[in-house]
Structure formats: C-alpha cells, structure tokens
Image (cartoon, rainbow, N blue to C red; front, side):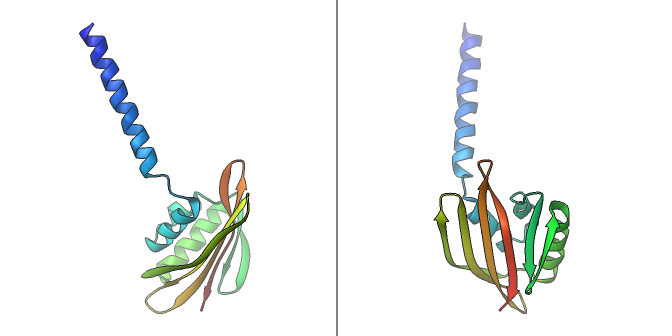
Amino acid sequence: MSNILKKYVLLVKFTLLLFTVHAQSSVSPLEDMVNAIKNNRVSDMVKYFDSYVPITINYTQSMYSHNQAEIVLKDFFDKNVPKNFNVLENGAPDNTSKFLIGNFDSQTETYNVYILMKLKNNVYLVQELRLNKQ
C-alpha cells in the first residue's frame, strides 16, 4: 500500500509542476513575437508562421515559404541586431485578429515594426510582418 501511495504522491507533484510551468509560459503570441525580436530569436518567431507569410523589409514585400522566411529573417537580424524594442500600439480589431506597431533600434538604424496575426485553426499565425527603416 505504501508503494501505491508514493506513486500517487509523485503523480500529483508531477501534475502540479506541469500546470505551474504552463501557467508561467502562457504569453500571448504578440508578446512572444516581441520577445523573439528583442532577443534576436528567429526560431521563436517562425513558430507563428503559416506555410506562406508576406514579409516586408525596407518597403519591399515578398511572399515567403515558412523555411524561406526563417532564412530571410535570420539574415536580416544578423545584420540588424535589436538593441531596444518599444511597443507603440497594439490591439484587436475583431475576435480573430491582433496587431502590434512598434520600433526597434539596432546599432545603426531604427526600424518600424508592424505585425498582424489572425486566428487560424485556433492558433494565431502571422499574416503580415513589416520591418521598415524609419
């Protein structure tokens, strides 16, 4: 009986640990994107990309596949490492979309940032990403 009780207590502890970790990591997709830009973690950004995503860099828009977008953004952020990020505005025009407007400073430039995310299959995915020199 003591062995079963130990297993039960261990199961309860493990379950509580999982709930605690999940509660701590429940960041909104837009906050996650901001943190990814701030910390130059493209891999955290691309998890919100659909099969194809329109990306505008310095006023030139292209449609990229998920893998292409990751390469393009890695190249961009390798050349323009964010030093500071400032959120200017964010909102939700309807129940299925969210947006964010902000800017980040690299060592040499300031970039305006616009992110539009829409709900698709119960997950928010980037529908547009713009990174333009100010």
